[in-house]
Image 1 (cartoon, rainbow, N blue to C red):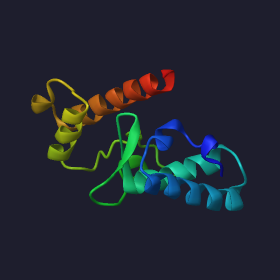
Image 2 (cartoon, helix red, strand yellow; image 1 turned 90 degrees about the vertical axis):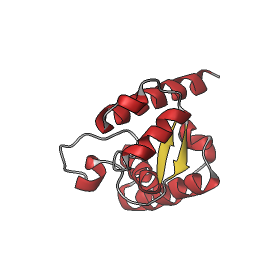
Image 3 (cartoon, rainbow, N blue to C red; image 1 turned 120 degrees about the horizontal axis):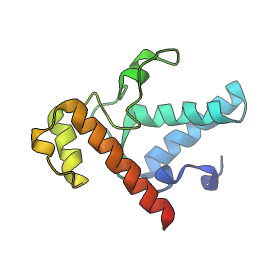
Image 4 (cartoon, rainbow, N blue to C red; image 1 turned 135 degrees about the horizontal axis):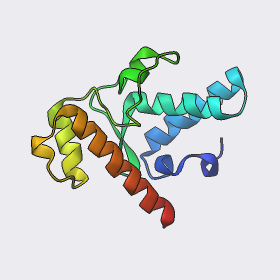
Length: 131
């Protein structure tokens, strides 16, 4: 896989995240063929070891599923957290929210923090794409 075909959020991420994506993508292409399924599989591999913070991916403290969708597998009806490590502690989510300058984070419940981080990540990604 060429780096130019990689999602922008991964281009702005550590080399390890990029390498994880490329290896998983190449393996998925062999299994499923080129296309959306290969990209989704590769992104799922990234989400297992990294979390989205703003417009890029950062290593998670502990590898594993990041949300109910990832834990439940492909056929689950659960919603994804869009790269936010929803299984992380509330304290961790607050620290991510602080990095993203999210106001009111100290009084937010865990689900509210996840949602606020998702929105801030989307906003950061939109800004990065516009550059």
